[in-house]
Image (cartoon, rainbow, N blue to C red):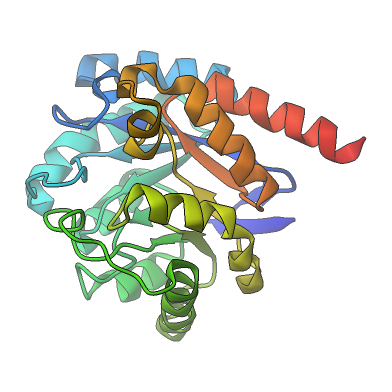
Length: 275
């Protein structure tokens, strides 16, 4: 069991939970996840009703080769959504998907509880000290390279060892900065080939040595639809399969586009585990 302090509210992870993805973007890799400002409350309500514990709000796509937005451009997209969701659903936990320290600071002031950074502070050197000062949990993800270049030639001698080594250094840096509550995300699809992703999933329990929650973000990613020779729109069943494997490997949080199916996977996995 893990307990995260979200600005004085406790998020208790006594069993795995679901993080629903809210992309306020026109170019995320899965077209079904792109929402307009006018749709934000409807989509948030649906995810909460289906059992999402956390909603992860993002203002820019980080798919391979995607263009970068400035912090100010990102804030224009996400702040209205955050304020609307926080007013309508005051008890839901909200995370911001950003690598800009400025976005982290301003969105936490607007109601965000958790900062989720695909670069674990590597793309903005002010991020770790900013999150520490904000006193919110931090999701640190492993990525080889940057979104612009990460899929050009991913290369590892031993991916599990290299991801673990990275997190040894990163957890030390986070603690030194003053971050108390940390969540680790192995970064499926970020600077990794399909083979790398399967190797990492197969050995994901190695991350339990850090004794912090592990987030698995596998939802509708190319590892699924390229392996099955289908499209992202057809990848829900494959997502459920890999989410279930991730649960057996120790995942505490499933970050998904489709909340209902992920909640069902957790319910069945919990029943199986307790049998």
